[in-house]
Amino acid sequence: MSPPPNELYSAFSCIGFVLCAIPFCWHLQAWNTGTCLYMIWAGLGCLIQCINSIVWNKNMINRVPVYCDIATRIQVAQNVAIPASSLCINRRLYKIATAKAAMTTNADKRRAVIQDLLIGVGIPILQIIVQYVVSTNRYDIYEDFGPIFAIALTPLSFILFFAWPVAIGTVSLFYCVKTIYTFYKRQRQFSQIMVHSQGLNRGRYRRLMALSATEILGTIPLGTYFIVINAKSGVTPWQGWANTHSHYSDVAQFPNSVWKSDSVTSGGVETFRWSLVACAFIFFAFFGFADEARQHYRHLYTSIASRIGFSTFTHHGSSDATSSVPYALSGVTVTMVRTTREKRRSSFSTDQLEASTPSISIAGDIKPDLKVEQYSPSNTMSSSSVESFHEFKMHGQTTVPAAIAPTDPPASVPPHFPDRTEPTVHVYSGVDTV
Image (tube, rainbow, N blue to C red; front, side, top):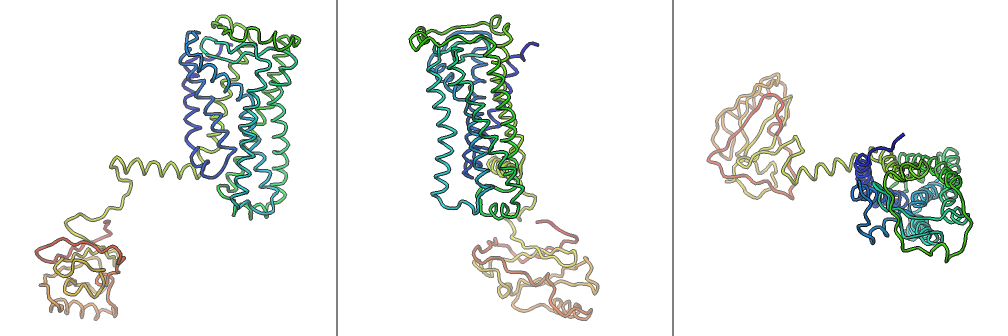
């Protein structure tokens, strides 16, 4: 079976990098060090392999040696980086499941972050250092793949390099099993701790358990697979430091016809780079569609829409020509407009309405059919307004209707009413939206 096209991997690795970058901010704000390290290592791996697959597509030229040195060291670190990040997640989940109280002090949070960094960053850096012991040369370049680290197949290589992912995955498995057991054993106390745990709730806790369990189920089998296939390739005795590093400055170059024809090499290389893409997609599948993620997407959409001038609200205010306040009564919306000759700066209280109160005739059964009668602004109600008011009382209504008893808006922001030649009353039948 031939490997997938190189262009296909370039596309998927680029998408994997974006998927890891999307939820990074809100996990960082929640002090989720383990998940942040997971996203950093998985996203960085996807980015580097995407660049490599584009730059070295259909060629094996040693273009940028400094970049190749950096990229291959990151590849060595990724041998244990994602398993170490998963170990950080499992340790935190286990501590939460077995804690008697939530971690609330800043000192406890800093201590937990330092411990996670020592595991999620310290172990990968240590892996880079010890891998140099069994490294035969700076790096190799495979056509379509790009630079890759070079390592001698000696018994020491299995101890210093190949066994690390399996060992870390085994420790994570221990924490994962203990966490699941404790989680279902202490449901009530766990719920109390969740209330005071910053950036973590029951749903996110379960998703973290599912993510770490999935990672363990991938780490231990893959680590074992690499140990087996490399052991079958032929193990040579360790011949000392000088012999191993005698040609360390060399850069070997291999075309597709050479390395893809070897099933062991081709399977190992393709498994390594596609596993990074799988980690990115798995993480996004667990956290990219959660409730907090959808809230951040909504907030981002609103922010972008407001910047480009697109309104995301269906409730619109009145125009600049009139400043109106709607009042509803039995399915009727009345818009009242005041003139600025009364008072420009006011808190819009009932006492300040004075002569601008409109004259409204209302039928006895309070139907939506209202009549607007003309009136002249004065400090007393017009005769027609008085008649309408008496007519309203004669039909059994003893209180002032809401249409002429508006509620005061906040006094801190006084409304602005533009100058008008005469007061105007707009009456709309049905339910109006402003």
